[in-house]
Image (cartoon, rainbow, N blue to C red; front, side):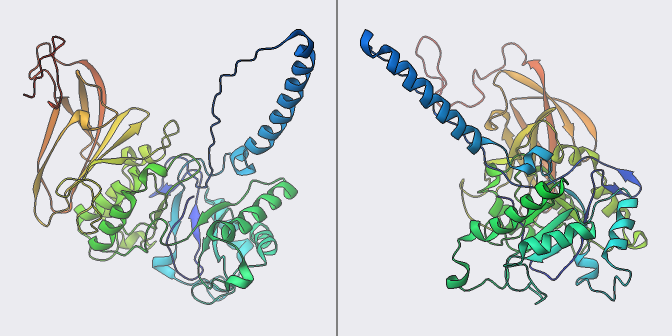
Length: 433
């Protein structure tokens, strides 16, 4: 399930198939959710007498036909998957931090005129509603009016629905669990798409607590969200992304290094990337633009081949699997189309050295050396063999690396194993004793 935590009043979330940042277009984007099933394989041995052979074959054939019909019906992808909507994390701009609530005074020419203008810019447009009686700012919600509202949103020309979680109906009214509460709108979106022949709206769930709490423009909020995602980051893939909330790059008192860490973590964990600073370019600093225009980081977020994000391989100053919002996991890695991605976070309030053994990442092969690409300095930094140490990482700073296989490590590299635990010669001699 994809979810976000933006407990706010109606706000437009602009997103495009090719997001525009300072006149440049980057990547493809989407968000949705799906579940994938695998069926067990059985080995069956039949002992048949001649009399029962014909009837058995007929019975098996008929049963196979029924099973295939059942599996086809259950395994047929939802219309969202057929359309391709939601495969990659969506990217764009969310108006909340700059403009807050939307209303007829701010948009006097109406919604259709607004979405037409947005579409003319090569962007797509999103709108906000709520799964309860009201939104969090007490505008009308969509509960029991899902079909009506989604038809209105489509008629207005919107492409995305951000769907919040306030004003929950009483249990005796809703009689649904959390999944059922959101399935009402998901089904309405699918019904409308089938009836209209148009692509389904991109469905961006906001159910706080299942992924993270609301974001804020400060390090404590960012580190808390990173900490929460360290336990569920494995669950993100094509068509289902853990939405870590809108970006705070350019907002509040975040330092340049903190903003880089923020953008890196969100992008590499495959969260949707929604800029939400003041839209006026006259107020955007060069440092903010440098972060938002990092095409190497964005390219990993929008990787068309690998849908999974990075996950922790070591927590660092805390024992692994520690739940600590001030000091989340520091060492992360994941696959990409072009190699293994590493993210190292300095969660301390002072500069620090960060060291790791390459094979701590499950995506690195023993006995190989790797070419190192720095995704922030945009430089090729030689090759790494077995271990790496990054010195003097700034307070709350980040290191983002892409390692690509560069062949066998130098012959005779010692010790025999980079990680000594239970390293053994073929003659039975343990190296770690």
